[in-house]
View 1 (cartoon, one colour):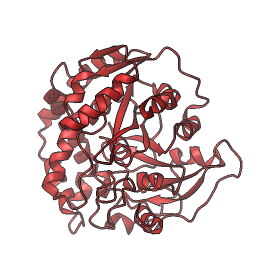
View 2 (cartoon, helix red, strand yellow):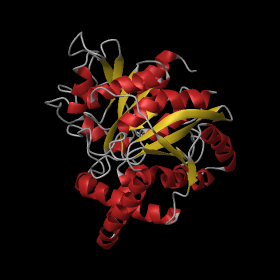
View 3 (cartoon, one colour):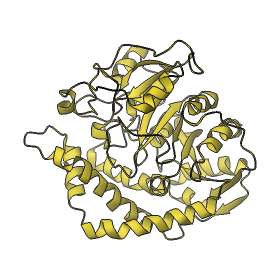
View 4 (cartoon, helix red, strand yellow):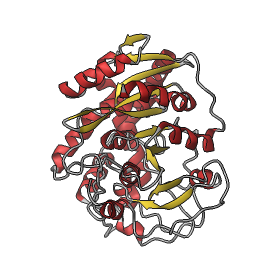
Length: 391
């Protein structure tokens, strides 16, 4: 692992708050945490990985999702770097640099919650808050070998969090062990009872999406957990899922940040400029057609899961790219991994990444998707599944 001071410097922003608490008591008073620089903390600027936003005014209030863990006594030790305006899967940022992947320092940490995952993976804090739209908690958790939860859409308010694609944006968090992951959940969901009667399914076709050696490493790990059945997830075809996701997510992005991005003199990186141009080009007809398609896919998957089902899929299709990978390679990687991450994003479902194995010495994650409001089931079962994966 690289020098810990270097990892800290690369993970945390310079404009964040000094370490602070709201209270010395509470269920999380023995834990420290970091906050992705998309979340408002009163008195500090929320830069969202962009130099123009860094020149904005300090937030007047702290995001409720941050207040929830502060109110339970957790100590905030700072704010962490993010991909520029959260539009990234890799953690790279032209203006502020790229946080370290402590598990594979020659590779990217994953984004857009890059600084948060780096801080947790390096042991700089016990947990860290991130946001997840198309994989921004799940993918970095897989890349860095930690646990990460994307919550059910709408269960945790995103007030005070920069909007990127509002019909997809969710709050999530990282931790190194299942007990801490679950304890953080109690700040949002209350006491988490032990889950009973979980019906574990394996999406067999999803394991054909990653490169062959990754799929071959993950599949026996998933089967060893004892799924009740192996099912076909992409009955409508992978391209149907992607063709539904892309116009909706890009349409959201343009509606939310399009005007901001086109202000004369706006400083944005080449990758963000290209992403915005793509978002602008999406026809309104494509967005309109994708809306009922999303609802049909949601109905299909939620019916499959019911109240007690959890389905397993790989988290990412490949190992994290090397830090010097060209932009073209990153774009190709993102499109392939979206075939996996778009499932929970489209259907607004909670998804848990657990470290499952390593390939070439690099962490590879396995994901668990539950039905709506199945967050507590995932948190309750995380320790059991993690133990099985470690066996």
